[in-house]
Image 1: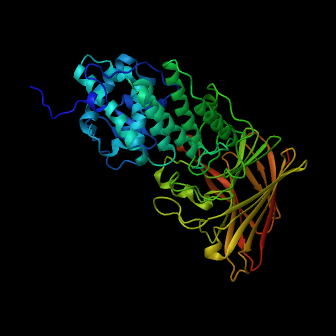
Image 2: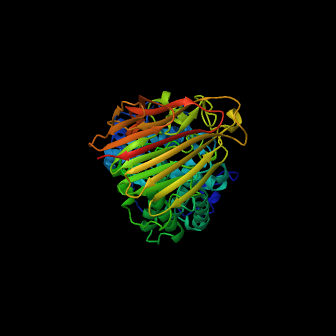
Image 3: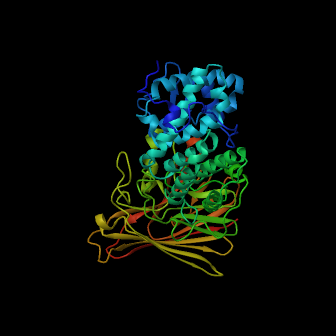
Length: 533
């Protein structure tokens, strides 16, 4: 006699007992996986960056794992990498024992695996890689997978507020939309899921196309999720909603605004260096960028462009901790490219070496000024930036002669009574970049002098030859282009530096460092990069 006190999965979801839970379509992932991660999977390891998880005897509690890696594992994003390595038949033999073990350890709605953004990723990747997961004759196993899928969707929908702000909330909502499209009778909850997604996207992708995190690489992640959604709608022969298409246009505009001439994104607030080909492949997906939108006064990113030169400036206060707890203390720092060569850079955003994670967040790792070797904003051992920069003021002008930026931040006001003013001018034609950095009293005369260092980090392969007068240097790029640097004020030193390249790799480079002590009045440093050849 059946236990009348138990409620079946179908009843909890509002389905009648005779209606099975199943997927309505087969969909293909439009995003390519990572080759190295695929090789690691064949060796029995899930890998992301420097972290790894051994699948033999798996401890799904993931002791010691980072939050990002927990999301990668519990969200089953690694299925994308496996798709590069194994056909469906061999992939099913590989995946299904893993899924069984995972379900045995994580099928109750508590713990790390049930955070809404991890559920959202899991809903999506299990749908995209369903042939790997569900091509089994074991009806008990199949029922367990589909039962978890339906329960997880319900849990995520009810607990959306628990998803961290920003990109995780976008992922949570996107997964719910995919579940609504793919799961039998999911159409009844699709409208609510789409509304949740629209809200998450509107909160994270600003009207100018840049993300609230001010980490440009987040735009690539958003665009990947949008096109996974597009593929799911197409699989159901449904039109891609106009709201999602509009967000796709904004994101494209933001990506293009945040690219330097080398085709890669600016290294801001933890954004890693990715290959230009990878970004080109993403932008090649069907869609159209919104016009007249990108970097601007309210975006936290300023773009100067003329001729072959592009200058990108971090022109905003630190992003909210809720959307980027690993932001950098680099207000008013800039990067510059000449054609396909990046010349002035920040040290980087996402190092493979854990010992450098805090280093790249420091003010000294950015092409801007430091006072008394202190960061603009306090950087704790873990977590978001503390006190320091509260306000950044910006004024922009353009004329036939060129483009001006006048900027100021208050990161050194509380400690030293100093404001940092930076003025940049890119002349028409793009062969002349002039700058002026001023340390001035914050409404009063400074009481004491403080050492400062104005840094211009150079990319690897750039040769530097100081001039005889100690007031300049000649830069020669890897492709033989030459720029002359001239300085008025301070003492120029050519020193070692680092640059975090693709895959988080460490590359040795050089930097121009202008040192001195702030005056009791205004300290004015004028400099110029002029293209010679």
